[in-house]
Amino acid sequence: MPGGRLTQQERQQIALGLADDLAYAEIARRLDRPTSTVTREVMRNGGPSGYRADVAQRATGRRAQRPRQAEAREPQAPAPLGHGRDAEAVRAYEETFTDVLVQSGLSRMMAGVLVCLFTTDAGSVTAAELVRRLQVSPATISKSIAFLESQGLVRRERDEGRRERYAADDDVWYQSVMASARSTAQLAQVARQGVGVLGSGTPAAHRLENIARFTDFVSESITRAAEQARDILVAKPAGAESGTDTGKDTGTGTGTDTGRDAEN
Image 1: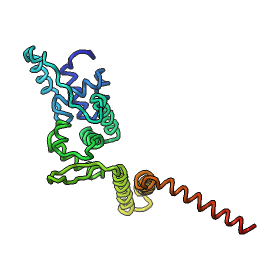
Image 2 (image 1 turned 30 degrees about the horizontal axis):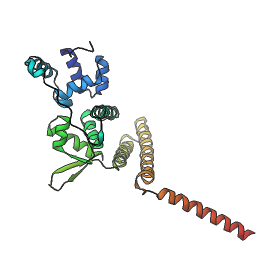
Image 3 (image 1 turned 135 degrees about the horizontal axis):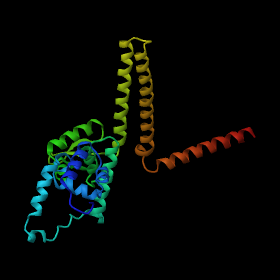
Image 4 (image 1 turned 90 degrees about the vertical axis):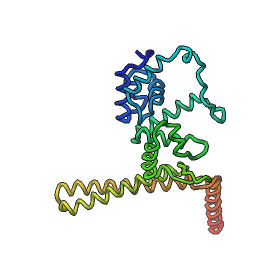
């Protein structure tokens, strides 16, 4: 029942959902439970990569057997966030953001790392900070960072204390899209190699040629669109757009008027 404690069977379903990289919201929907219930359950019992149904069940039993005096203690208020932010609203937003990234194809852990990077005011985080925030092992963080870095989503840097930090620049989506375009172009190249191997004119070679032509076109289109978007939305300094428009209008107007005067 939605208002009661989670059962052993429900915890097993949560574990299976995490193994399948399902979003917390989807796991909660299947259990007919609030998303916050699933989120608290997972984060309280090892995090997304460390959650085990049997371990969580035993831990819940131990907590239930604690002295009532301990249960009566005032719950600790969450650590205050800067800029007057509502901690619960921020937490809910991070869950939603993570779910969206999971649905786009990232694992939950990698999505969680990205959300940490995107929502930090500092602009970068250390591995230790990610371990504390996501409640996972350093090895799990290292594996996630390695993949995200290979996709152009994260870069490494050193702070004054020579600690390694991870950051996601404002240019991160451009870098990620370009990495995707390069991967697509590589697929086209390999597919085209197969045409010669399997014999030009054969059904298999024809299929590979179609793959190569399609992925070539997609790769070129993605690259062109990303570069245009970067020029317009990222690289152009503030005020440049209005200056450019003014220049165009002035140039066009002057040239046209001068031409007409000359004709007259």
